Length: 432
Image (cartoon, rainbow, N blue to C red; front, side):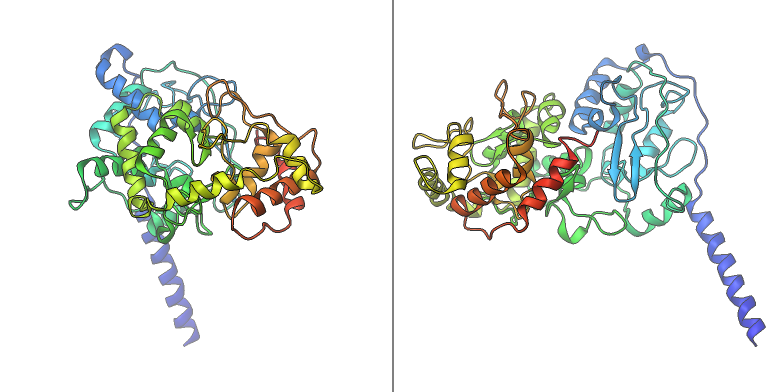
């Protein structure tokens, strides 16, 4: 009896494994000779350039100080470091020998030309929504870039997660391929914004928390998440900022990097605004803003703005005079000379009662900005915030953060701030 059960179990295991292999296996697509750049329609290439900007492809695929799209840039994940691949048309180390069919399969299905499954650090779970014409434009753009021979370092994903075939299991659980389907109950502009945000711009990749296997949680889409040592704030109504993200406010932020009510584009969001979206049309940026303003339910919450601004203007008068409070003294010396208003909110002097970083459940963004400042490439053009890492101790920064939380918001205090400051200081401004 036992022998029969054992044989049956082994047979079932063999059949199951064989079935999985059959499911997971993908054939290689024959290599091609790289087509001449002149063979591509210039209009299609130009369209691809805009899409590549909207997808922030350069941000992940360009190494620091290296050639555009030549790969090698590290992405630090809970499973190890993953290095972006070379997507220049170099036939040896890039995608030069990829046909359009191979490129399309990679974008839509997350499978490389040689048949191997691509790690989900590449957002194929979003790019699968792209139309065939947009994929064609992206292919034309990348195949007309300068070929760069560069091989990315080996990933540090441990065994057995580094076995590409097993990525098919991840896809079976979490990946639903298919093109974007517009919602008939929404406007054309909303659907355009949804197509861009859910597809090429893959906003959920940063702003949606992930499960233990690294997949986005569908039940918490746009609820905010950690990315590159920053907090990507919620984009839904759970965002704790006092003023909702209205369509106009978000449009201005995405276009300029500044919001009078929420602050400046810093950290990983800065290149999204200043590099990625700069070629995207006003109409498309407004469409993205329309989509997220609806998710944030901004129209229904518009009445919150006036009261929130009034509270902020009143709160901003605290800490601008003589005080025995050591935290107030620090704030007066370091912050008050810039963060003031003259009776109205000035986006060039972000009001800290309204600022997203002060209102988030986690103090990471505020601490990072105090320690490392905002450089000339971030936020407003030619306007910087100095870094206080060298002049302030961990306790000083913690005092200022706690003081702002207490005097500018009605939220609960952040716990263990000094330890948090020490941890973020040790991380440095970036991980590179």
